[in-house]
Amino acid sequence: MSLYGQYDPQNIFALILRGEAPCYKIYEDADVLAFLDIFPQSRGHVLVIPKAAQARNILDVDPAVLGKMMSAAQRLTRILVDELQPDGVQIAQFNGAPAGQTVFHIHVHIIPRWNGEAPEAHGRGKADPQELEALQARLVERIDSQAE
Ligand code: 5GP
Image 1: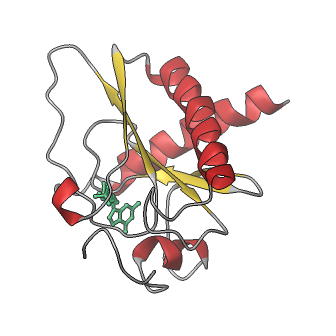
Image 2: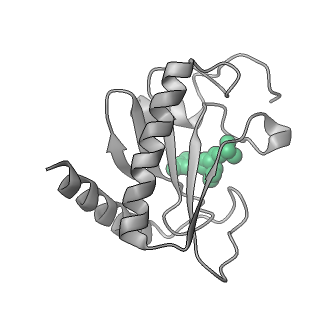
């Protein structure tokens, strides 16, 4: 799909938002949902998506929604850094297939990076479900502890 087009309500993130597909949720509020990428580029690869918007990319998202998505991404980046102690964090957001976008519901990637560890290919190898579950539990616990 190109940069322009109709929002497809059957895209995988729309299914996740409607509860029609599973996800390893780590955080949710009135505006955003955040969950682990199941084809992670690194340990702790998180996706942040807006809940209400039917926006495919940065061209058609409401700026207020974009702001909420980015503030949640910053907050979750701090959580990931505290929990996983990476050496760096990559924040990525792709628009249109030629730019690398594969799911056409706008989202931000948070990708922890470690010295000497090259990232996995984008959207390729599926993570071990047990590892994702363990990571989800650690991150949820840290988020909950900071909310108290
Ligand atoms: P994009 O390529 O559009 O920037 O990013 C889409 C991301 O969604 C990729 O990193 C890919 O690994 C991830 N992804 C694709 N399908 C699923 C899924 O069913 N569940 C989860 N959690 N992530 C997915």
